Image 1 (cartoon, rainbow, N blue to C red):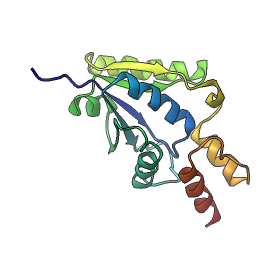
Image 2: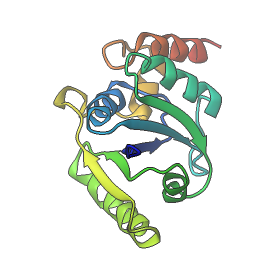
Image 3: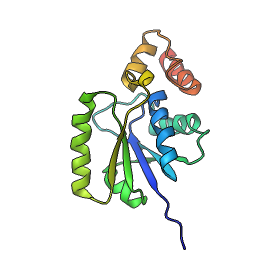
Image 4: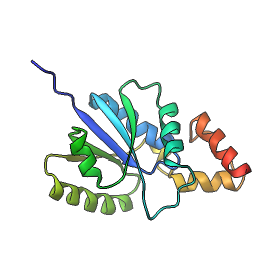
Length: 163
C-alpha cells in the first residue's frame, strides 16, 4: 500500500528569511512529512533580494532540516498547493493584527479549494517582533541583527547595504 505523504507549503516573500520564519518551519516540519517554502513574487513589494537569492538563503538557512524544500511560484498559492499535492498552507501570526489579513486569505483559499487547509502558528515569543522589513531597516541603519537571522542572511544583508 502506498504511503500518503502529508505535505504543507509555507508561502511568503521571505525578503529575507529570519529566525521567526525558521522557528515556524522547524515546528511545522515535525508535523508533516514535507514542508515546502514557496517564495512568492508580490507585485506590491519591491524585494531587496531576487527570487533566486531568497530561495538560496532559505535553502542555506534550513539545510539542517531534512524534510524542507524550496520553490518559487507566481500566481495563486492555493493553486500551487493543489498542484504540488500539499494538504495545507502554514502562515505565521505574530500579533492579533496579522490575524485579520490571514483570516481573509484563508477564507478565500477555502472558497477556491476546500481540500487545502490553512494553519496558523505563532513564532517563539523571542521572535514575535520580527519581520523582514524591520530586519532590513535595522541593518540599513547600522544595527546588529545577528541574533535574529542566520549567519548567511546577515552576511547577505551587510553585502547588499555596503554596495
